[in-house]
Amino acid sequence: MTDITIENTAVSATAEVSTVPPSVAVVVPVKNEAENVVPLIEEIHAALEPVCSFEVIYVDDGSDDATPRVLAEAKVRFPRLRVVRHAKSCGQSQAVHSGVRAARAPWVATLDGDGQNDPADIPAMLARRDAEAEAAGVDPVMVMIAGHRQKRQDTSLRRWSSKVANGVRAWMLRDSTPDSGCGLKLFSREAFLRFPRFDHMHRFLPALMLRDGGAVVSVRVNHRPRERGVSKYGLWNRLWVGIVDLFGMMWLQRRARNPVIEHQDTP
Image (cartoon, rainbow, N blue to C red; front, side, top):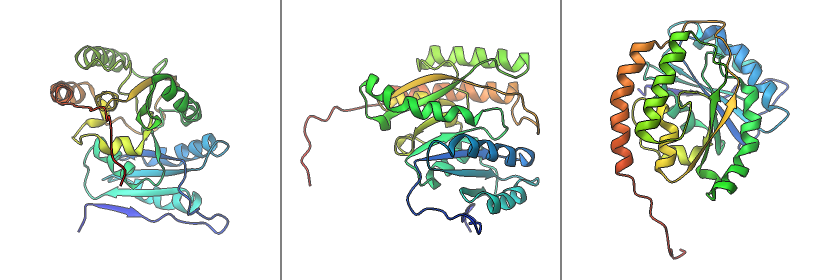
């Protein structure tokens, strides 16, 4: 028996899911976020329905609260919603990977499931994508738009620890990203699935994009206080794991090779 299940999209009597792939998938990893599910899905629809075709993929990372039931009920109301469920918790990085792998769309926007990221920022990130690719002189597939949280609505301890972590990471990895920990990011599915896969990789997506020869652009985004539920992270379970991962990421950077193709015969 597989540890991952992908539930088919529910289709209401008044809506049908197109066979044409949507242009963007919004991937939301969650664990025990039952109270936040429906409000965030409503906001995603309000933000993207006037802009583009989209799908919403929730990855339930082994929740043991009412999250599975709430998601099952939400599928009846929201035909764009698809659910991936891990039988056991595998962590946020694996949840993001499962969601990206399940996506039909060529572009992926990620959001934290606690409601602190604002889906209303996604349209502006989509608008920046092609212009930034042209400015950087790279294939649009190799551009990542990363959120930079303004006026963070967290405790002073979390703001301080994040500031220190971002500073150390930027110094060691030189990823030129002021807020790598922001869950709101936009990237191509193709580029993401080429990244080396490891636990906690979601903390280093900008560095991984740069490692592969891509470009990363940080844009200011809204940040909101958590209104429902409880944070899964504290200072210590971020700090020690982050230090170990930094050295692993440096190892990956030093071994990156990005050849310039001078000639390639066509089939």
